[in-house]
Image (cartoon, rainbow, N blue to C red; front, side):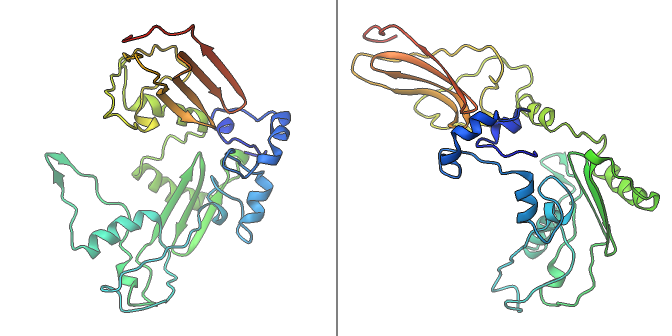
Length: 286
């Protein structure tokens, strides 16, 4: 994302924020009413001295500190370790620390081999030789390979060439960990997520008051789809409030009762609101 925006949801929907819309929000940027995404140049500056930023596989995109706290299990205190490791190594470390072996089968389901290498060997031996020998990285086609202390990186968007000696180890790891085919369309990758849980399911039933909150990714996939919401409520009194809502101030919809009318407010990326308002509702159950 090269340009800044007051609402990153524009980017996640494959859109650029209109410049005028950004200017209208300029005094609110950084407050709770915005979801800002600053310019790529600021991201690069913020990661100095490392190169590039999030979504790349240069160190500016994937270098993080890790603090391990285990008073009863680590003799060393306040020390730094230089061995090269990856987030995939955290789970094997916890498993070894807890003395648990990954079963080949669990409840009749064959288990995949645990990725990564435990870091426990380094806890009380600062100069221990690195047990990790190779690590691949890939995100939206941007990729890297670290092997025996050497690292090669390429940006997929720029089609930067790889030396043939680098391609081979990355290729081996990519096939091993299901990286292929390289799929660099971020918007499509995000878009297919809502279909992954429900398949062809068309009807979703929620019971109040038990269904207080359902995570958006687990809720009915109504985005960009014609949909119908049906509910039964009792309007004998002066009750008002939200019946159902998805999303928030960055985008989504809410159906609610106010002043004895039914409202449906569709918030398009905090830029445009489409509001439907009913005639006065009848008294009693409806």
